[in-house]
Amino acid sequence: MAQLTLFELNNLIKSKLETHLAPNYWVIAEISELRLNQKGHCYMELVEKENNFIQAKIRANIWSYTYRTLSSQFEQATSTSLKPGIKVLFNLSVNFHEVYGLSLTVNDIDPNYTIGERSRLKEETIQRLQKEDLIDKNKQLELPLVPQKIAIISSESAAGYGDFMNQLNNNNRFYHFQTKLFPAMMQGNEAVVSIRTSLKEIYESEISFDAVVIIRGGGAQADLDCFDTYELARAISLFPLPVLTGIGHERDQTVADSVAHTSLKTPTAVAEFLISGMGRFDDLLHEYLYKIEKVCEAKLIIEQQHLQYLSNQIRQSAQQILTTDNHQLEQKSLTLRYVSKRYLERQQAQITTLDKQLNLIDPATILNRGYSITLKNGKSVVNQQVEIGDLLETRTLNKNIQSEVTAVKNE
Amino acid sequence: MSKKSLTYKEAINRINEIVVTIEGDDLDIDELTSLVKEATGLIGSCKDKLQNAETDLQTSLDKLN
Image (tube, rainbow over all chains, first blue to last red; front, side, top):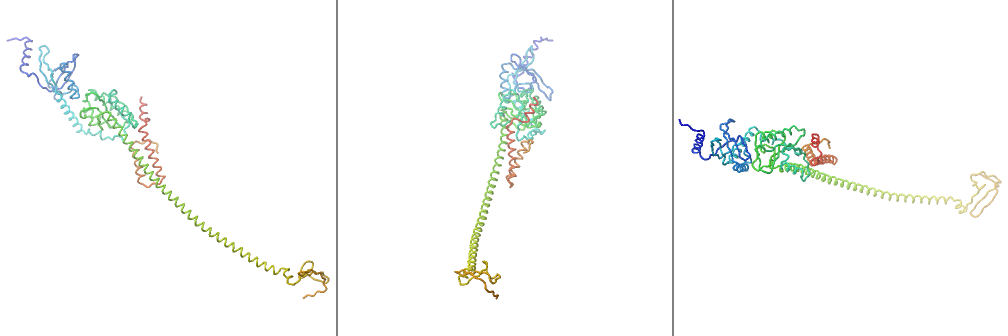
């Protein structure tokens, strides 16, 4: 029985493999472990799973020079780094080393597979969310007319957070927003848990926020896989406040975007959205103010016209009354003048008549006609006792005669 | 104007109601005056709130810190 040394055996295996295998193969595998050593070589464990059950497993490596090129190409194409948990299409060579055994060396990677794989996964996630009625859940929440109290989930150091705050606080209409940052990891493996923790804090906060804003980013293409996960999407969808996203990416919408109440491209756009919402409300206020002014103006004009009309009426009526009164007054004054004139005339006539009558009975008139008056003690004798011896005075027109009574005869 | 703070939505609804009323009905000048006073008061307080930093949130935040 022929005997081989171990080295001979390993050599045999090596030469059999070399003759029977092609120089390289395109192989789909999931990275289950990945580490870089100090020299920059990348050591991986590749697996194939069926329902979480490992069906195949092998070591693979990417030499540092190749790794530098491939990893940056991969990141650029897929916006994600080579890391455990993703499926990759590798171009591999099978190596067997007498001491180190079997291993695979990566020559090339086709990122298109991972892109396709990821969009398939994303599609599956979206379908699942749809089936569970979670896509529109957050969209059905009513965004307050003026979302002014904003809870922000971001990383304090993120450029996007700075942009957002800057845009919000320096709006040219001087609107005031109240914001509170709930810091979270915005990329990488811990992001999902970290963002969900922040959502929980917001939910439990005693401040009643109007909306939640999830913003990150800008800058280099980064790992956005966390925003495509079912867990984060579900948390956003079921959150009781409207969630606005500004994840700041250039590729298609993430799943988080599609379940958000409103998704915008960048943090700045989210700020603009909030400011313009406030602007619309402000404009509405002005519109109402304008309408009120117009109504008041019209009403005032009508009232003024009415007052003018009334004051004209009053003036006219007063004028009329004055004219009438004046007329009557004139009439009366005429009457008065006439009546008084007549009265005076009548008085005059009476006086004349009396004067004449007086004239007739005036003793001088009688004396003039040749009669005389006889007086006793200065008074007419007609109503006196006359006795013999009385001295009488007889007046004529031109004489005054003294006599003594010698006889009295009554007739 | 009522002292309790209305939400923006309540305020704008009331303002709208007043504008519809004063545009539609033939109000006498006293009614008009009091409605206009109410509406402009609401508009003023809304505008104030849009731009004013002194709000309940600030108070709550201060309490937390």
